[in-house]
Image (cartoon, rainbow, N blue to C red; front, side, top):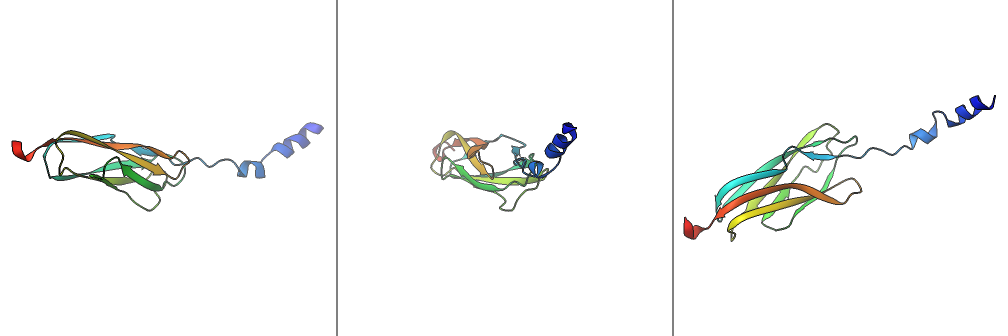
Length: 130
């Protein structure tokens, strides 16, 4: 009769309550947006739609670009599992020319640090050629 006692000790109880919470997962609908040709000095923007495909609320803690010419904006409030939001990316082509690709790095409330987010691409036509 030791088995029922062992089963009771290992059955539902505080041990299951401490199971790790499944983290949020940031999933972008589009990974890349190409603006095509733009004129040097033009500012363009695009909103990338994302979904929290994880099991707990998602908080975007930070989003950065490799260059100050590209500025991401994101919702500061938590995004519940299954809900969507938008990250707006503004690119200023002032002083730039030729093909350009800028990537956004995103940090969310998990322990993975910065992860690769969406990127924008464009071909900047200089003022002299226009």
